[in-house]
Image (cartoon, rainbow, N blue to C red):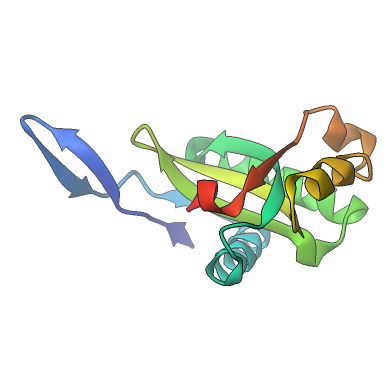
Length: 130
């Protein structure tokens, strides 16, 4: 499948909508993106999650590898992905969990596998992802 998202970009003298270069994604990433989309639509702005990983869409295969490894060590239903346009570039992120507050999210970091903690995951609030 090809993932595309509209980007609001500066072209010449005005802002306009544009398509980024499509990135091919794999079924595992596609499933995580769908879980993320559904979760984000239902989660309140006040909820928290852990940001685990982010990469440019050009490196979409790295997301697949990360999701595959994480799926061996964590509950799949709590693993989600999202696509965002940061500075005009399409990026993918991998997030984990759903927490009522920042304190609960911070405490959950200790429960992650060592290899995930090594990349310094951090709490984020849902309203910051929207």
